[in-house]
Length: 369
Image (cartoon, rainbow, N blue to C red):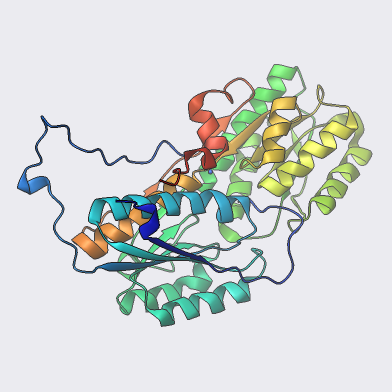
């Protein structure tokens, strides 16, 4: 049977203005594989999956940004691979839509899209979300209407309690900040740079849970390097040009006292790459960033970044989507939340198979049969 042909895929993109930059706000091992039994391994009745109650499973992936490498590409690969495995495992057709605004900043469109999705009453929603407080009432409403809502990334507490959503798969944000600070200090020491210099901290936009990551970076760095001057966080509104300008201003102000930058997302990481490359100070500046878009990965390879804290978009998306099918078709309900931790990728380990899959989850995408 050609399982891919059974997948009904409609990608709906709500466009306003195409972004000039990717918003990559990922740590995947290979997805679970459904193995065919060998002739010697006869499946017992207890191991067989019962005939599903529905013939067609309707799943929607609501993305905060179709234009994002994180949300629109890496998460999408995890969702789509899970769809293929659902078809194989359960023998059902799957109607699948990916919907959402172009940019993360278009939150009004995100909310109106969620309302429209709920009105369609799909079997499940795999939902990337950035603002738990704002989406909580709609998630609760969808759950009360019998829609399985599994969340991808960020947090849910305290706005939502366990009975008001399905499962949350996330990559702990404060832990990312701690890992980034530790990698930053290690890079300073490796380059022989002082621990009493000046550090620039940069982020895209203000989102409460992402602020926890920034705050943890700052507090951990203060503990590891008490004499370090840590500048007030600068926000670039996901505009790489603005991000470059903010960093160049700090370089002009602090000169050789500035020992490095931390960037809390991929657009900020891209700006760090450009600034360190153009400054000619790759040996005297440290760059640590979050996520893994192509410019960040290139910068890591070329010595303009010293480390990337890479999240787990693929793993979160795959498990969130598979969890919808397990709940709807088998009644299996897993834990309310599952942390899928980040990893630090450096020039020294970036070419290992494990780290390659983290840097580019698209290499895990199933080939069409």
